[in-house]
Amino acid sequence: MLPLLTAGRWPASAYARDQLPERVLQFGSGMLLRALCDTAIDSANRAGARAGRIVVVQSTPEGAHRAKALNAQDGLFTLVERGLSDGAPVERVGLIGAIARAHTADVAANPSIQVIISNVSEAGFRIDAPFPARLTDTLHARFTRAPDAPPVFVIPTELVPDNGPRLAAMVHELATKYDQSFREWLKARVRFCSSLVDRIVTAPPPDQQTAFEATLGYRDALLTVTEPYALWAIEAADPAELRATLPIESASVVFAPDISFYRERKLRLLNAVHTATVPLALLAGVRTVREASTHPLLGEFQKRLLFDEIIPATDLPVDQARAFAHQVLERFANPWLEHEYRVIATNQEEKFRIRVLPLIARRPQPSLALAAAAHLTFLRAPLESLREAAQIPEFAAATRRWMGVLTRDGVEAALETLRCS
Image 1 (cartoon, one colour):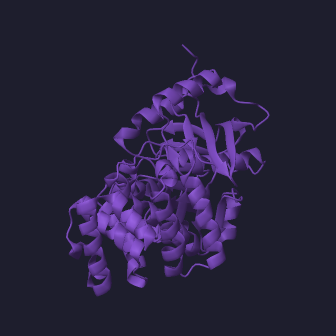
Image 2 (tube, one colour; image 1 turned 135 degrees about the horizontal axis):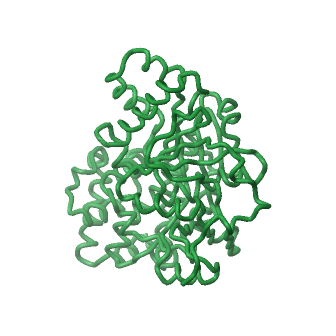
């Protein structure tokens, strides 16, 4: 039995963890937060920026085991980055030490806490879910116990458009149960910032977990496997104020007064391609994103979709869009990540409406019509569910034709027909 990862393995030369203030309160402890946000703070600490440490608050009952594991491991976890960069394989392994502890109670009343981060999933990002009410109560505790503490930045990372203003609206509505002075304090002392996160993280299969731990020489219940690429774009009305509070800017962390460019780029050039490919891949029996990238027909479909149809349907600068698209295809081909389409297919109908339908409305094209046909076939949904796209006569007719081909001849025949057209 290998020993458990604990603080005794932390390299003293990295940074003195116990000398940094607890500056960030984090709702959630899932893989994305660990691989992106916590890692960004750790990197800033290693660079001498003294960004601080994180106190994790369990946000769901399902996260109880992670909170327990964090405390058992003294807040440490191992990050494994594996993938391709400019065609060359990259593998980096390191300890992440930015988390101080996991706590069952909110600690936002501590004046040293100046940032609150969340990732409670899209399902938990609703006013009737537990998180917004808990955040409101947390902020009220700060107002009650430390009203003159420094302003606090609330940075949600849920994959929801305009997540900052949306969370602010929920909190301000829920705050009506308190008196007017608290609501005025919220407006004066709490900054809600939208943010965009982009990093593919997957749980390692049990055999990989065992192999990693054998190489490392210890057990790690929170071992996190991710790709080399990372982006966390944070929208702040005053980036300089946020920069002074949370000095973590880097090549992969961007502070800006407007992050719509980064949001649109990811939504259309990565997310839309995923969502358009999911039904075709699953109907064809293709399990992972990597398998699709090397599939002779699906791989070509994704390239045609990206470069010939999606990029021209956006307002993104063409050169920057094409460069990012090439990067996306390289990320899809990552030989070490098991990114399964059955997972990506979660909430497929809503994702298709948000990510793909606006592209169809702007520029209906053959690959998009095939993607729509596969989407309807996969969900057994009527054409009318495509909303405004169903009102475009030529597109509606093309979608019906592709549905006929898929039903009669299958996915490969449809993709081959598209390739030859």
